[in-house]
Each structure stands twice: as C-alpha cells, then as structure tokens.
Length: 220
Image 1 (spheres, rainbow, N blue to C red):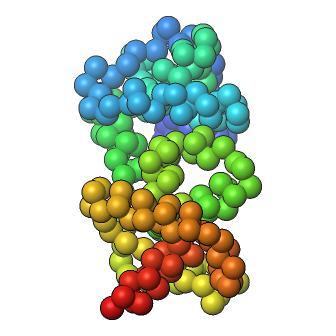
Image 2 (cartoon, one colour):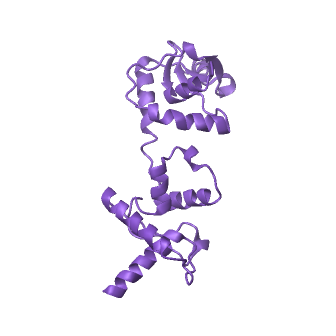
Image 3 (cartoon, rainbow, N blue to C red):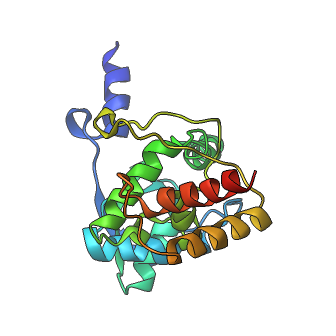
C-alpha cells in the first residue's frame, strides 16, 4: 500500500484506523430527501431504549453536506427527548456511494430471519421474569404471538433449542388471523376450565392445547 493510500484510509477511519465520533448540533444535520424508509412508527421504541440504556449508536453523516446517511430515526428520537447534539461518524464519500450505503444499511436488517423457536423461548423467559420486553421494539401483538406459540412461522415441529428442556418439544403453526383468534379463544377457555393437576408441563398454553386435543379425541 502506498503512503498516499495509507493517508486516505486514515482520513476515512480516523487516527490509527479507529472510528472517530464527533458531537455535532442536531440542527446542522440534513435528512436524506430521497429516503424511502418509513420510520415514524419506531421513534417511540427508540426513545424508550435511549431512556433505559443510553444512546449507543452514532449517526452516519456525509461530511461534504452534513446529509444523514443512516440514523434518521435515531435523530428523531433524540429531538423528541430534547437533545440538541448527536454523536456522529462522518463519512467522506460521494453522493452515489452515500445513496448506496443508505440503502444497504436499511436493507441489511431485512436480510436476516428470526429463529422462531429460539425467539419464542427467549421472549417467554424474559416475560416470565417480568422484563419490559416492549422495549425490544416488538409490538404487543408480535409478543403475544410468539409467547403464545400460535402465529410464528411454522415449519413442522422443531426441537427446543435448549436440550435441557427435554422431553418437551415446541410445535409451531401458521394460522390466518381469523383462525388465530379462534385458537386463542379456545385456549383461554381451556385454561379457565380448571388447573392442570396431572400435567408435568408448566406452560399453560401447552396444557390448554393438550386439553382441547384430549376433548376432541374423546369425541372422535
């Protein structure tokens, strides 16, 4: 690598190749006029995250014109809580590269899928200890779906990720909205029918579903 190339890398990454975070007035930052990402609905969840954990993710900004590349929603959240400065990492790139990186930054979050059994188990564990799981950004409908085991993406009957939970297994189903409502109503009624005295399962949803199935089989 030539001395000129080394100098260019240092300019982009900061001294000794390290990222440089600068605190700049929010009023000086310019939103990307062509931003195709809708983000207003997620501002409140980011505000909750900042209030609990502090601000942890600098905004990416094009140095030439102070245009926000990544972090529009974070900037809105900072404004909402009354902050006047934001931590920024400046990028020395052209307009086209700024557009490309902005699209990549948004799209990259969509290119990874959840592992439904692991996600469901984690949300249930957090819910059981009373954690504020809404701060994760999941809506209550999503949380209810995953912790209720009914509207996760179903691909059969995968084993629970934690081998210590054998001989239990998790069953996943894909249901239409109208079907999901019926299933949830049936489970609620099954729970209300009385305690599950003879069951080794501590999961009330699993016990309720088993009770429904037992009733059906008894009538078959």
